[in-house]
Image (cartoon, rainbow, N blue to C red; front, side):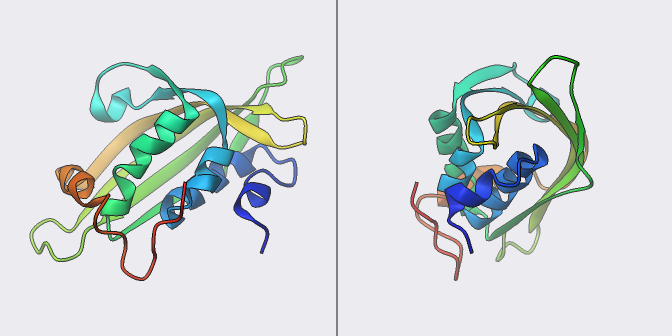
Length: 171
């Protein structure tokens, strides 16, 4: 199997950046996650958490995800087909995909999971090597199931309780 960075942006398919990002989340492969991102990313989770749209450095964004996702016993980010479009003369490609993100916490009989369903919209730009980097990431929430409060518990466990049998990978 190719190395994380090589696999993240292969085949020249713009959708590979999104798929690699999501696989990186679930595998806790922060090198792979970072390799899918441009140095700055416009992030919009306002439909989920409120607040405002942010422009973040990729390393800071990876640190945010890394401070939460390892605290879950498992996550699974899945998409439907990825639609790719572009404006004539513009190198930036726009991606859209329906998505479901499952977050599992074992050992809590009353609230064991949180699911968020919605649509990802992304902008990706080409690299010199023929890959793609995410420059904009928006999640439009359609609905949630389960307990969003598990996020706080995951944050408290993220640095001390890696997933059983799946150790966190280095940054």
